[in-house]
Every structure is written in C-alpha cells, then in structure tokens.
Length: 89
Image 1 (cartoon, rainbow, N blue to C red):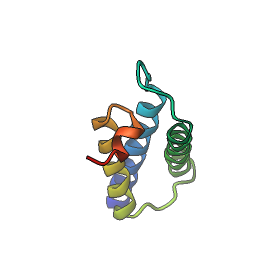
Image 2 (spheres, rainbow, N blue to C red):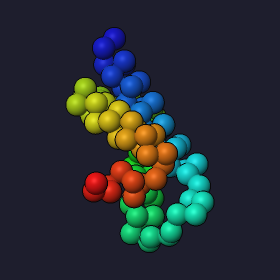
Image 3 (cartoon, rainbow, N blue to C red):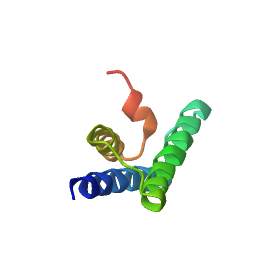
Image 4 (cartoon, one colour):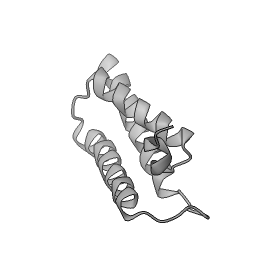
C-alpha cells in the first residue's frame, strides 16, 4: 500500500511540473534559448516519468517522489519561469 502512495505522489508531482511548464506564458520576459531548452527537457523528463510510472507500474522510491515534489514546488513558486528557479540572488 505504501508503494502505491509513493508512486501516486511521484506521478502527481511530475504531472504538476510538466503541466505548469507547458502552460507558462513568457509575456514581457526575454527569450533565452538555453533556458527554453532546459524547460523543454524538464517537460519531457517529468512527463515521461509520470507516464512511465503510470503505464509500467515501475517501483518508485520515496527519494524519487521527494525529489519530484521539490521540483514541482520550485516550478510552481517560480510560476513556470525556469530562469527564475536558477537565478542567483
């Protein structure tokens, strides 16, 4: 039962991450190809991990679920702006 809960947390965190990044609107922020490519990689990896866990039922460790949750929190706090996550201030 615990494995299902951990897998559910990981799938939801990855889905939130991918969804928030997909729905990001740049507005008046400047375009940076490197940051856009990094956002693309995050979308692919988070979405792929969510689909892979859902379809294949791969065992997810609590560490992976925690890492996915932290990434989801960071992406949501930044409003989907990947550059803001990595900005040093």
